Image (cartoon, helix red, strand yellow):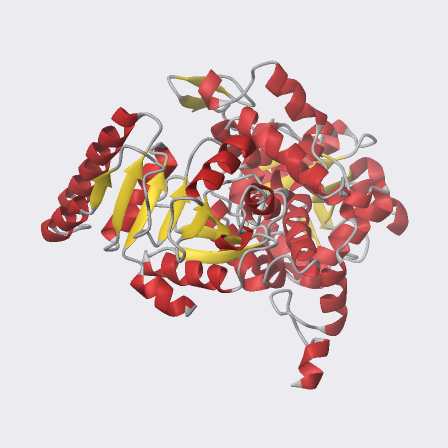
Length: 518
């Protein structure tokens, strides 16, 4: 079958399940000129859904985002259907959006196969079940694919198109063209645990939980660093509270176990315990934060204490550009900055290693540890500053270091010293997990970046982000973490190692054996 022709000619689809996802899919399709049969096990839910969608069109008209003629036409394309299993020979596509249960979906598709036409494609909107597993109920599993929309469907432009092990080769491309026709952005996702978005999205929360379990920083501190230094719209703990641990924790466990306990994806005991305690987040009024009338209660930024002014000396083993940036920042204040090759006996020493702890770096280079502190260089000191304090530091010296950094006018977060600090570890984990997906050929690099940008709202795709920061920096962070912690979760992916060595961008597949035969 001509896949482009099929996508252009789709004129009628059936959506089974009129909950939030089914309504959103129907709204999108009808607005794109496609007739939509709506069906649900609960008959009254169909009328409710059609009324709701009509109301959404009216709101779009009121906001000037849809004209009245188009809205009226879209409403006429919504057709109530009493029986989900009514003959569907004229339907080009049937999308199920019923509850997330394997047997329920299998039974539905086995029955649908008997009433649809030969050219009808079947699609599941599953967010977590393998398409191949659902397709085992069909006598012809080649006609089933995954079409995973995100909530809220009209606003979340991303759609994962998933081919099962037996899906006909033409169907994924045809569905990709159809998604574009509907005004959304398709990505090809693998039929593996978490598909693409939920797999790539494990890098951030798993490392944030690891930082919390090590006592490096509190959730609010990690979130502030994630927002201000990395530019994320929401910190990892904010996000887990919004989603709810009853949703987030099972995904963490499923993706980890589905990839045979891959250390990079290892979840934390923290989420299981908190889920069992009912600390689910916003929906229960208490999670990593507390909520009053749905509003997150965030403690105020701590006020830096008064401290004896002391000169600051930035470690000469720091990268020259980084040292110049930090010196320039401090020189713009009333802080005394020493620029010599050695610090004076009174000077506070600031060091900015990638991937190393302050104690390990200071011990290697013979720095006076009792007055040596770390400042994370990631982000170029343009927003929030992170001050790392090790157990052997002199508290009075630490207060002077904190006061000096606070004098720059930037907020300062104080964290416990650890290899890589907070922002470095979060970013390295995000990039390394994405590199692992590319390395296993689970998805094209462009699809990985598109999926994460649109599905998770990151400021850049993870591979693009790694290229922006510098693959060699990401690699040095991971190698430093691995050497100091001996934890295999920080094992750099071969994709990262090879491209760093060869000077090839992380976003590029590069030269492959197949290229030699072209």
